[in-house]
Amino acid sequence: MVSIVGLHFTYRRKPVFSGLTLELKPGNIYGLLGSNGTGKSTLLRNIAGFLFPQKGSIDVLGFTPGKRQPAFLAKTFLVPEEFYLPPVRIDEWIKYSAPFYPQFSREQFDRMLAEFEIPQDNSLHEMSYGQRKKALIAFSLATNTSLLLMDEPTNGLDIRSKSQFRKIIAGSLDENKCILISTHQVKDLENLIDRVTIIDNGKILFDQTMESISRKLSFRLSFDPEEATHALYKETSLKGDALILVNDDGEDSRPDLEMLYKAVTMEGERINAVFQD
Image (cartoon, rainbow, N blue to C red):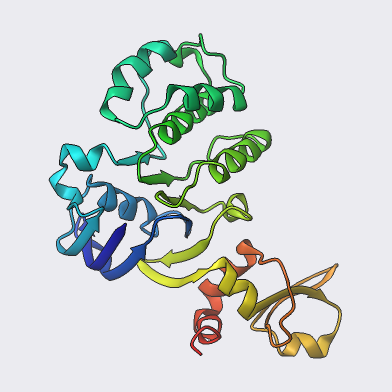
């Protein structure tokens, strides 16, 4: 689906990526995690063909994104963090935008608007920022492109809307589709993604499936000081020590992505060493 090999990209003389390699496969929802300014948006824009690598290669569905071929554009959609929608009614927006995407489904679009509680007769310029974003998300999913890139899609959404977003995304994946979601709001992707990729300063610090994380690591609260000495990472609170431990006992624990992200950025070598064998 997506193959990135030796990606080098510099923005205003500042190196962003220096030899980044990554592969994305269909049938998965990927979470690209990292703080603001780590290169998440730049990576998505390189994959979408809006930016062009100085060195290395990007292959998306057999296309080179930077060539911006119509067949490539019809199979890829990017929901940017900052976006513009024209000051027209929804029907007019769909009339002129949908033909660029041969697999667009008006039935799906209408159903998702209803899920997001957005009236069909609304004019886009009269909507709040959150409503416009939900309309764009609904459109992006209704295009049924093979690759969907989403940059900080939950920014501007309230708690209820984030729950609606997770439900809609989870129901939109099939074996031929790949969804890559970048965010610094780690909690918003829990129970949604299949694989976690953490980047910092333009480098991949961690890249594992949720299944592998659950099998290799144990996340728990503990009041046992001795157990805490064996932790790969710990956070102390009044409720006890929140620990990440090697899962030697094969216990089933729910990964805490926010805690994992902090652990990887602070104790990356120790965390990654667990996945070496």
